[in-house]
Amino acid sequence: MDLYQLDGFFLLDKPAGITSNLALQKVRRFLNIKKAGHTGTLDPFATGLLVCCFGKATKKSNIFLNASKSYIATIKLGEETDTGDLTGKVIKKSSDFKFIDASSIEKALISFIGEIDQVPPMYSAIKFNGIPLYKYARTGVDVYRDSRKVTIYNINLINSTDDIFEIELSCSKGTYVRTLAQDIGRKLGCFAHLIKLRRTRVGPFLLENSITLENLFNRSKSLDELLCNEEIYKDFI
Image: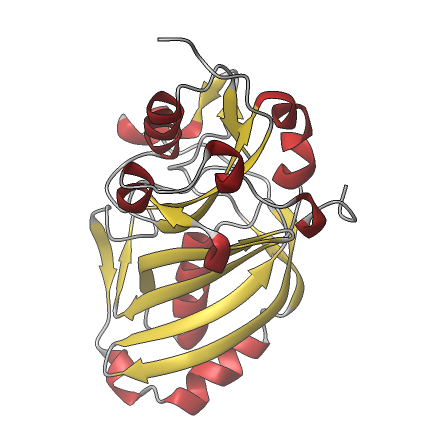
């Protein structure tokens, strides 16, 4: 079957349980696209906006790698894991979260607005001596990491019940939301980890304009109609 040379951005609502690259390849194979890439990974457990680039648009992917992003994150109090999220092992516990209310959470969140220092997690693709940190982590080796400057543009509490609360935030490139969740827990004095993450925006691209894999496979639109309208991003690049 002939492959298509299609140029443009395709907005996918990535499901949980698969890597960003696998999601991209499912789209590429289904549409028979010659050349494809994306503008930034989501962890396998995370869902939401994955901006796929086709053809000539892959040359512009770096622009959107550097774009700000927005998320909805669900955080569980009382436990810290070695990965900062639900996929890791619990390494610290506390029952002090029982005394934390919405007002306390909101006060803690405000302290993270603006430019902050963030230490990248060991379970990340950042390289040390040419080797990804997660490979060291899997062997039990902890490598010293310098903190990095990232910016939290806004962060708001959506709801909270018992030991779980949900926030929405916008942040700069390079921000690890699972590290932020961990730091919020430490700020509250009770530990925490990320249990859900959904990306809602990448630069000018919005989740509301995306399509799920299921809907893609049952599509009724033409290939060109599946691509993002240039009007959405032309002023951004």
